[in-house]
Image (cartoon, rainbow, N blue to C red; front, top):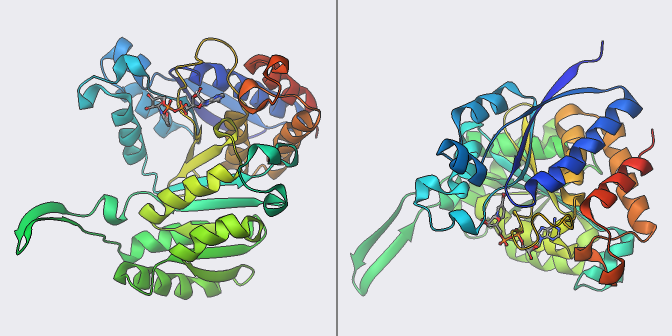
Length: 359
Ligand code: NAD
């Protein structure tokens, strides 16, 4: 009997339930085509959980995620909860779930679909062949270091400290090497080792670990140079690994190469193969309930789950090829359509992708 993979499904708020429904159709089709088996459990999270359970992250939802092999999340949040106190805000639930599940890295692919090159602000010839992943450390660095104000000689000063220990660097760097091994085997480690002590430690650890992955070519690039090269020659990158703040900035820069937020998938990974997969976009309250959201970001998040958590490369590829085929045939949701009058809805897009999946 096939190994049954347990997937915790959190539809969330706004367009979350609409796009997640299409992603589930894709998983059902994968079972049919490839013989893999999934079991789904649904849980409340975010605004809907605040309304129904009085907390953004109910304990039973967290328990469900801990029992699962992977989590698929739609999106959370919306104007209804924006003015709530901190503990009753959907974003507090997001931080809570990442911490409780020990997710220490954030993975964001930026892949250019040829037929959407026009949607980017960069020239099509610069984008040609771009297919990269940014691996960002998520739980250390300057965002989590000690912060305080003090009186200095020239008045008030503010201090943010950036701290990394060897173990924190090691685990994310290993993860990045492993991801590179499953791709084009080229890893770019980004730091600011000419100035920062944390970066010098980062680089030492990367160099010490590198010989364990002899099949992966490694380069070190300073963060300012990386920001430039992403715009100049994005197709030369495969996997980029970096610390928290650099990764925050570079992953947004890389995301914008593709031109549309409705296309971007992401994963947050912990120890082992466990991961939480979600589209980069939010709950899009402005279009929620109208059946017009683009489900591709969520569907590509499923492909990422298959590749990174389950090692189902064949199924991941089948989904990505189906998305490309449907786009090449000219089908577009409103966010990526040039002629908005020809745009199709969320369900129609999901169903076309399911129909285009092949073994
Ligand atoms: P958003 O990503 O929800 O929307 C930004 C714009 O992009 C909107 O015009 C929206 O209509 C459009 N858009 C987003 N996804 C789309 C899709 N799949 N198809 C078509 N168009 C799409 O960002 P926002 O408006 O800043 O935030 C809305 C809410 O989402 C806020 O409450 C915010 O806190 C929350 N949010 C949640 C997450 C998350 O769940 N991880 C991430 C970002 C924002």
